[in-house]
Structure formats: C-alpha cells, structure tokens
Image (cartoon, rainbow, N blue to C red; front, side, top):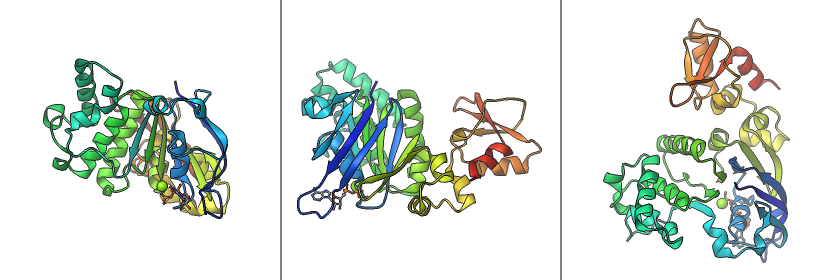
Length: 314
Ligand SMILES: Nc1ncnc2c1ncn2[C@@H]1O[C@H](COP(=O)(O)OP(=O)(O)OP(=O)(O)O)[C@@H](O)[C@H]1O
Ligand SMILES: [Mg+2]
C-alpha cells in the first residue's frame, strides 16, 4: 500500500519572483493513476521532485503512507519510489538486463531472483527477454528504451512510481502503444502513479484523476470525466478544449462511463477504446447497447446512448 499526501506544500527557488509550488494540498490513494497537467513552468516537475526529495519544500509536508518524508532516510525513501524521466537516462555501457537490475542489486536480491524479475518485466513491457536482455540501449529504438525505463522503475517493486513526461519525445503511434502497455500494467500492479504531462490527450487517456496546475497552485483535482464536463473555470476549459464535443468523446475511455452489463448484445468494444469509437459502433449497428470487454474478451460493462449523452452533458 502506498498513499501520497501533500499538505500545504510551498517551494520558491532563489531569485524567483513567485513560488514554483504555491500551497499544494492533495492526496492520492493506493493504486491510483494521478496525472499532473498544466502549462510549461506551472510547477509540475518541481512538485514531483519533492516526492523523492530531489527538492525539499520551504513549507508544508509530504506524507507517504502517513509518514512525513522529511523524517525519512533519503536513500531508503528513493528505493520505495520508481522514477522515469523523459530522456530516460539508461546507462549506455550497461545491457538492458543490467540497467533493470540496478535497484534489485542495491536491495541485495540474489542473482536468480534478479534475473527472473528482469525477464518478467521485459515480458510485461512486450520486449521478449531472449531478444532484448543482452542488448545495449544504443541498439534499441526510442520507444523500446522508454519501455526499459518503465521496467527499471518497477524493478524493486516500489509502491510509488513518478513519471515525468516519460513519453514526451516519442511519436504519436508508439506513444499510444506505450500508454496502452502502461494502463494494462497498472491494472495488474496497482501502483500509486504520479505522471506529469502537458499533453491533454495523454492526461485524459491515462488518469484516474487529473491535477490541473496553474502557477504552482491546484486549479482542479478530479476525474477526466468531471474535468471535461464540469471544468472549474475558463482556464481549465481552454486548457482541455472542453467545448468541442467530438473531441471530448474521442478523449474519454469507454471504461470511464460504462455501466454494469444488463442485457444481450452482439456488438463489443474494448475498455480502452474511446467514446467516439463507441458512438460510431452504436450508430452503425442495429443494437442500442454495446458490451465492453477486457483484454481477455470478458464482458465487464455496457454502454448505451444514455451513457454517451451523460458524458457530454453539462
Ligand atoms: N532548479 C531551479 N532553480 C530555479 N528555478 C527553477 C528550478 N527548477 C524550476 N524552476 C522554476 O520553477 C518554475 C516551475 O518549474 P517546473 O520545472 O516545475 O515547471 P513544469 O511545470 O515542470 O514545466 P515544463 O512543462 O516546462 O516541464 C519555473 O518558473 C522554473 O523556471
Ligand atoms: Mg517539467
């Protein structure tokens, strides 16, 4: 279990006119995928870096599992936290397997356990171990390197994962793939994730809840659906493009609005597909409901026009 709580956190860098982080209070429950979203310079990275104490707040406190992190040993704290950044920083002279094994080695796991863990993580990230284990970062694509970066962050089995624009430099198609892998992984592992992006589509797609930051302060903290349909103010509405209904439908995952299954239908849609795809399916089939399935084709919910209407109603 790993909850994270920010309590009135402030941070002002020397020589700056205003605080980079200005009185942030919020909490993340165990297993939640929280996305920090906001324009460049609004304090996303600074807020995140205070969690693993790359920066310390001027005032306020951050708690992990109700323990104040200012009282913890920094090394011990960082071992409980996986960290992925944009320019992933794999060690170029180390193989993929050795890069992933860094934290397990620090934790003094035995070799058999480390190599089993490494292969398991490579498999999870859709990198067949036999093919990738012994490669060097230079022998892989950018998207594959990011997958190794995610695997490395997970290696020591931390409860908390911090991801700072991990897919920022990746092309749109690979990026969608990586997002899908991450969602699938998160369903299995239930880590508490803080994920920074300034890509609105990415935020709406991945988040259980989104923190919208402006000038170091939280403007809104809510589910993607609530943020789209009940934006806190004009700034939020503009930031996420909430006035465009088709866009709105294309950004919301089916899963976020589905209802429990209730009746028969021959039409199915995956939980990670979007509401715009759901709308096309409803319109082009003779059915008035579609079944929502998980990756094993089990029915986990359903959608009707009502859910779609509710999703875009103000
Ligand atoms: N080490 C530092 N020293 C001084 N000022 C800093 C430092 N790091 C960040 N800042 C300032 O703090 C503010 C917030 O920066 P931060 O990096 O947290 O923004 P961000 O939301 O992550 O932006 P981006 O989307 O561009 O990455 C900015 O005004 C930035 O210039
Ligand atoms: Mg940043």
